[in-house]
Image 1 (cartoon, rainbow, N blue to C red):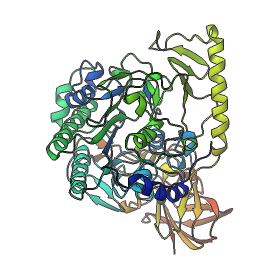
Image 2: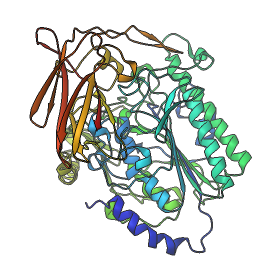
Image 3: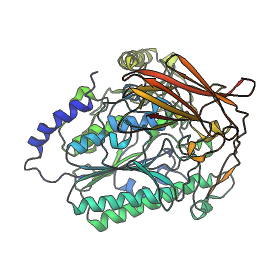
Image 4: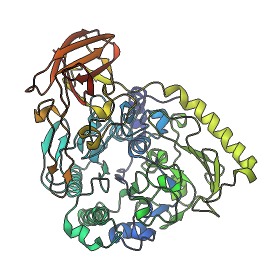
Length: 581
């Protein structure tokens, strides 16, 4: 399948837009809410007997609901699929860590599509598709971007941050803002939408929250009602606060007069992170799982004046890749060539069409290095999970593997997967490198969450010095040739902690971060372009510094690690600052 590049799209969109917008009425606004680690059963309208979500329930009652809707089992793949309409293995964002948490350069995003159609575009919350140029939201079609780094506030990028009075990226500048994270995202989004309304400009507002992802920090007023034995009180409390903010958004839309002509979509990025501790709507598996509980999620669509069908359930299988073509269709934007997308528009189903997707098969797959057959194939009520086959119509808990009795079904689904795999496999060997030396960002700050093909993107990995005595390399592409300075460290360089120092447990507003062990470091090495450079360090040094020359266009690996006084390798470099001098 050919992919319509971002450059091709922008050159194609201008004349298409000119012919389609002349004399047309104002287009609807779009608000897209994506919550983090909230599973299908983590809403009271889906039968949860403990959790109360009155505002989500109200939205559910007013919406067209896709009840057999599928994401990826983890966050970055879902976000990439949502914003591109492409399968994760095609767009490059196949896993929440390493360079494979980034969308490949040149791929058109949902924000590109709306911006090219004269919409204001804004993101408020969790991006998690690349922290550095050219992978940031402002590089991918968003004109306004307030977001946190990486997957959240316990990642390698940002693990000393707090859910209260946190530190976030404001377009390009990191600033500290008051308030609880979810309150902040919704408040900023509503203020931005109000300004766009005053300008009489349609908007696309992307509201991907970082809750209820861990760490589970929330005010007691939200968690206390759930403090019963066996209940994940903080997890439910984060959802309760989120629900309250959805109520505030509803009040804003009604008060501002925006409600009737605003498309409001609500979905979640994967199955519940609370696993078997919570109501799971009878499904097997949770976050990370290829069974139903890992990737079947809510999807509500409401547009009061848009001519959708009545509020009701639609049980046709659908997928997060379908959202981009659906919005293009609903907003009457210039249609993208069908060959460029894996998703299909859900608009006909939302408007009442029947059997629009008869016979459709879909694939759910993700991973640091995805392996053939490590996937779920969906066909109606059939689920082929690896080599196991389940009929969720009669066996929603996926208890009975019926592959031996349904060999013809298995073969048809395997044939579909083999064709699909042949289309995506060529791109899997092309990770998205970190760009260094660009005029758009210099220096570039990297961490262990950017390591090549190894998941070390959280506070536990850094504090426990995991990843082996040499760590892993960073894949880099040199934008401009010249002399480069690389500073490598054990801890974030802004802390200026000595390389050998430990770190006490850190008390946060509603929780704490674990301590970090001390390591006897007396020297450092750096592997770059086939050379190994070395230097001594002292007990006062917070970083080891190297200088060398790189040619423009060079694609290479940079790997730093530390050793003790006897020359034994003790740990990798978890942080690096790379600057073209």
